Amino acid sequence: MKTGKMLPLALKGLFTKPATISYPYQKVVVPSDFRGKLVFDPSKCVGCMLCVRDCPSGAIEIIKVGEKKYKAVVHLDKCIYCGQCCDSCVRQALRTSPEFELAVYDRKDLTVDI
Ligand code: SF4
Ligand code: SF4
Image (cartoon, rainbow, N blue to C red; front, side):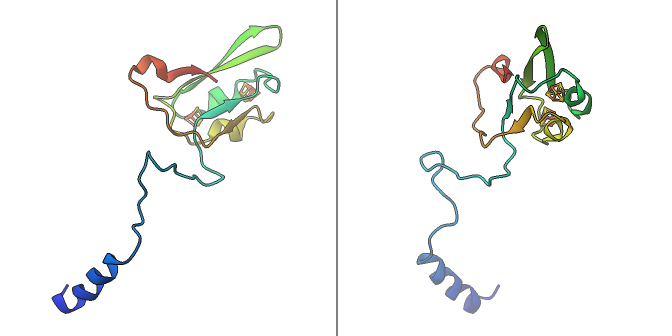
């Protein structure tokens, strides 16, 4: 780009607000359909295992914990946040949430009951 064209752009940049934000000091607002950490509603789960079958990365387990009672365990280090398990669940027992700050110091902490 020639200097004559660059100069107006550079001057404009001096008086324009930056597009970036000061994360993490300023919180990011994610879109309403953002696919973050999964949320599980055990009262809706019937243990059909469709979510486990359809997960492309083997990131979710459904474990029977009692008579018609199940818990979900997710390996956050394997999950690709595709939302397929939510789409596959006919009971709407799984949904994605806006939570994306999932960093931990120990990888073991990325296997969680949800
Ligand atoms: S969001 Fe995708 S990768 Fe993560 S548990 Fe569900 S199906 Fe598996
Ligand atoms: S697909 Fe839904 S109802 Fe079936 S095991 Fe998974 S969470 Fe439970």
